[in-house]
Amino acid sequence: MIRTLIVDDDPDIARLHARYVDALDGFEVAGVLERGGPVLAFLEEQPVDLVLLDVNLPDMDGLQVLEDLRGSGHETGVIMITAASERDTVRFAVGRGIDDYLVKPFTVTDFNRRLEAFRVARSEAAPEVGPILDQGDIDFMLRAGEPEGRAASRGAAAPVDSGAPLPKGFSQPTVQLVGQALREAAGRGGAGDMSAAEVSEGCGISRVSARRYLEMMTGRGLAELRPKYGAPGRPEHRYRWIGE
Image: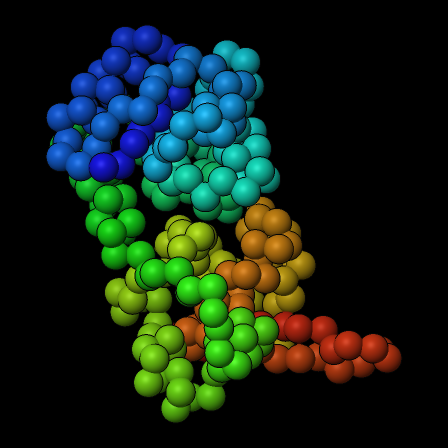
C-alpha cells in the first residue's frame, strides 16, 4: 500500500485529491496538510511513500519543502501538483529528484495515470544491495563501472532508455536532465565533456547528486569517465555522453 501525504493550502482541492487517492487500488491517504512547515515532522513520525506537493503554500515555498526533504535524506516519492509551470520552477524540482510534475488544471484520468506510473516504477525498482558485499561489488561502487564482460553478465550496462529499472534513490527526470546536459556539451565540439561541478551548476542540482548520477550513467554505458591530467594531484573526473 502506497501511503500518500497531500500538501495543498486549498481545502477543497486537498479533499478532492484525497478522494482520488482513496479510489485508487494500492493507495491510501496518510494525511492532509495545508502548510509546508509540518511536512518534515510528519514524515519523521509516520511512514509516507509519496507526497503530492503544491508549490504555492502560505508559509513557505513548496520547492523549499522539497529541498528540506532531500537535504534531510528523505527519499520519499514526490509529485508536484501545482499551477506553477515556469521553466526555472520545473527545472529546480526535477533537479531535486521529483517523480513527476502535474500542472493544474488536470483530469482525474491524468491524475490516476501519474500515480499508477509511480506505483509501477516503485514496484519495479531494483532491490538494494545486501549488507555483505564481495570485492567485485565494492570495486563497482568505487569506480562506478565494471569490465564489459562482467557488467554484461549482470545486466548492469543496460542503457537507462532500454527500460531497465533505476537503482533506488534515482529518478528518471533527473537522468534525462543530466543526459541532456551531457548531450549538449558533446554537441558544442571541443572535448565535449563536463565535470560534476559543471553538471551541478547547469542542471541546478547539488554536486553530490551530479556525481552520483554521472557515475550511475557511466556504469550503464550512457557516459564515459575521462580523467583530465594537468596540475599535480588527483586528475579531474570529466564525463562525456556516449549513449544513443
